[in-house]
Length: 105
Image 1: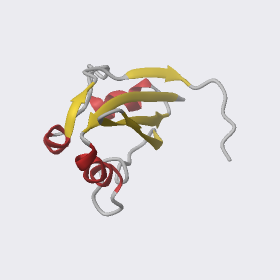
Image 2 (image 1 turned 90 degrees about the vertical axis):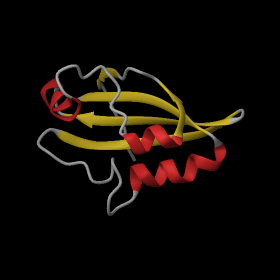
Image 3 (image 1 turned 30 degrees about the horizontal axis):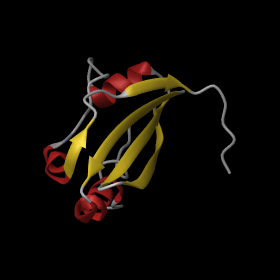
Image 4 (image 1 turned 135 degrees about the horizontal axis):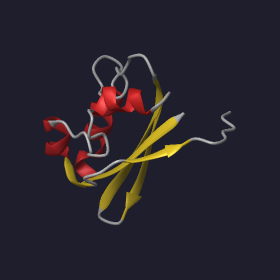
């Protein structure tokens, strides 16, 4: 399994809107993802000084599924226009890890 990890930051007043943009059951970017090889996501959030930091962890079966989501240059961050309006800053690249073990409850 491959885990795609990416960080973005919002102003505190935009944090709830950004979270909803990702997780809304009807049309959230992460909540509505599907496709062969897509295995789910985790969204992490924390207050970080004058900002709110978000970390997305998206799970894929293999690098082919990552490329299906993000394109051939899959290490570049995938940041839709709506997200760019809500984020104050972001990482330009995503990092990918092979998941070696897990103990989910």
